Image (tube, rainbow, N blue to C red):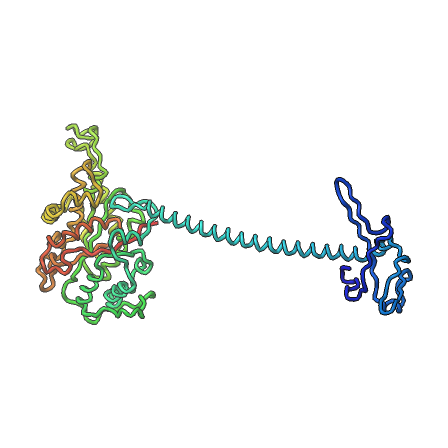
Length: 469
């Protein structure tokens, strides 16, 4: 009754249950454990099929309008015989196998889809985990970042550093303003690669330096519409149409703490850039060698090294037991590397604190008066165990940012004619950003060391470099 090749129910006459011979036909057998019900039947074809020559064993008797089957002529055992059940059973098995294959395919597809979904979910989770891990790693790295005037450690997040130090990002528009007062004035071919490649990335008051130079050259700042890119290719250097006759309104200040006989590439980054700035602005430059600082922070005293008055082995009989002279000698060695960076000789003054500090002393005293110990300790993290030199030194590094510390070097005039007035010159300091704390402190009290008509109220301007990888 099932399968593609069997007679449909609509074509059948009726089904006859066989009951007369219990042994060979339908019966019910019951016992204590189970009950078996056997139903045997035969399919009676419609009357029309009998005239076409049906089964010889089936006899149809017509009684008026009714057609009855003569069951006495039907062998009941044949109803369940192999010959009769073979085709149905075979088709059933094929159908079962087909259903099994389809079920397996469906299960496989479902499993694959589920696995894909699980894999996708796992991948998403993994990516989220990686992202979270990276975020946590970045956060941890940012938390591990240490940048002070004396220590640089961890993975440096420069955006976070700008936020922490309170400086400003060096924007493309500021680069165009720098280009306007350098490249466009014919002093250099193009902006320095350290600017184009964002090695110098942060600043304080660079826009005011640009404003002073624009006024000096008599040019207007570039438009702020963003349609003009910084010149990335070399251009022909030409003299400006109206070269200023008055002295440059700014000067440059940078420095080096001599801690070793040889300077590495990271030390040279500020000097190479400063040499370019000096040519670009055609301005004076002062370079401070802080040999005093290195002795204050790293110096040593050994009684065995002090002089014994005999002058044995050609040594100074009156020498002390410290190594201050060692750092003084490092200044000389480092100066050889620095002057090789191609500064303008007649516009450059390189000095040692141990030699020149006397000329800066009046400004150093003014800074000491203006800054409290608590301010210094708060900025640099000193405590009561620090020697007094450490708390006093920030004033020494701050002093060169005031032009009045160099009354003869920077001109010695009063601002008229061809001689600059050092007291009103604006100072631009190229340095690594770890040196910013010194000048952040300086900017807070700068107005106390300059006349009221100073263009920046005495505040030094800074441009910060990243650290050498």
